[in-house]
Figure (cartoon, helix red, strand yellow):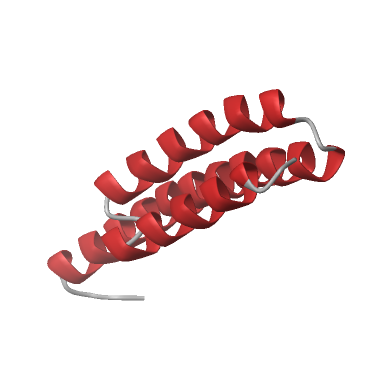
Length: 87
């Protein structure tokens, strides 16, 4: 364990940020999974609704610094393309 006060604080801050980022990433994964399940079921209306929610979650994660801008953009683009490919 760290002895210096600033090092102790960094440990606490690092743990807090890690847990926050983990929760946000988990939420994004869940939102993406809902879109994928709707796509596999062939339900375009539900897929579009879930895509909107997933896009929002991804954008919020990017805004908070959990995802890089290009990573967020790539995830949204791939999901949108998959939803649009439904017959």
